[in-house]
Image 1 (tube, each protein chain N blue to C red):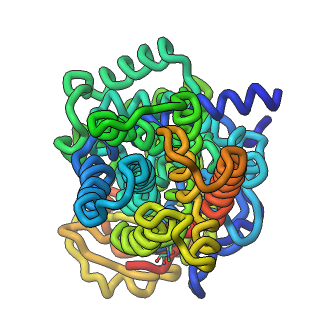
Image 2: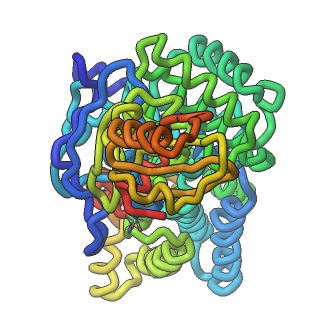
Length: 251
Length: 307
Ligand SMILES: Nc1ncnc2c1ncn2[C@@H]1O[C@H](COP(=O)(O)OP(=O)(O)OP(=O)(O)O)[C@@H](O)[C@H]1O
Ligand SMILES: [Mg+2]
């Protein structure tokens, strides 16, 4: 009985996902913020630091792209829908908050992993080789869920002005990129830098990606995966709990 | 299950404002229940609590046998809401909106498509099913919202002023659909400002003011409870002055309208007797005599103290 209800709700979350993709993702800004911005950051670094290996830079680009895309739209869905009152409609439907959040997460997850094709193609064109495709795919799937859930945590403050949430999310997302060993290799960081980096999920994702394109990773593969799984579970549960608390304050 | 809605002590406070104040009522299966009140009375707040959109701070609501707070998914599965302000996704087409609702209610695709087509046709939207809702007029949006709400074939329908601001044609279309529901055993909970609509459509009405329920009854009974507002319309064969009538007891107010007098009274029976006596003593013939019951609007104004 419970499992039946669970599957039923899971199916309904696909409806939410489809709606999100149609309304929010099939629009220009997602691609621009999710891909072009990381690309410019990457090019700036590529030109500036000749001494870093191409594998290191490409894994950073993949990390940034997936992270920015997966967190591009998810933070503004809830405030936006509260403002145009479609949230009221969703809440009146027989779906749980978990279903709603899971659907939002799925949409952002799909775009997060699809966009990864672009930096991977750039990497291949620049001569990198994917040595561990299976690990790369697993890492992408995990990272996609992790970052999408993270984006949904950013949308949980009960403000209905999308611009407020955008500001909060930019304040969190940009610094995170700089502490995650994307521009400076972890091994070159001072001790405190490594400590800070260890609190960012992006660190482990990027490290994992480095491993799969033939560079040496800083952490072991097992630690990367374990850390990512823990972050993912914590982020998703936290996103649901926070929204359960704040979603009624939006209405 | 006799009562599809049971409300106990339902209360909502916004900041310090008591929007809904310990209200109690029941809605019977198959009836059209009207919820009347002036602006800001707490109608929308009540509907939103009953449909699980906002949480009450006190009290509970049992919807179709399920507590809306404790078992929201079960309670919501067989009800629907047509909210005050339309809220379809404007970036989606009418058809996509319908299919989204069907998915959220877990309706199988074939069944959903058949039902969506039928509903859109009945509300004259089928031609425009592939247009984005952005380009719809207010009436079209409101009709689409009704279609979206009905996709799950609900047994209990909540409508928050469904026809306010719509033209005659759109309101009539919506009203016709509503009138079919009781025949199918469906129950309607309708909030409205429109007294005419309420007295014609509703089996029972609740009048709410400042978050409290002022009265609940059948429209006809409510009209009767306000005896004081009953009035008599009378005309005589020759002109007389209003002052001549003022000696008669039980008269509250006399108004002259053309050749008629409209006399309001707190005792209709006694007034009629006195008036006939008066006519006899003055050698007047009574040409017409009508009793006039108060309209629901007068009851409403009386109970809510609004003018
Ligand atoms: N989200 C909210 N925050 C603060 N106050 C609110 C909120 N929603 C409603 N109120 C207040 O609660 C009271 C009842 O509002 P409600 O919308 O229920 O009235 P209503 O009877 O539906 O009025 P109308 O006929 O204008 O639709 C009003 O005084 C309103 O200002
Ligand atoms: Mg209202």
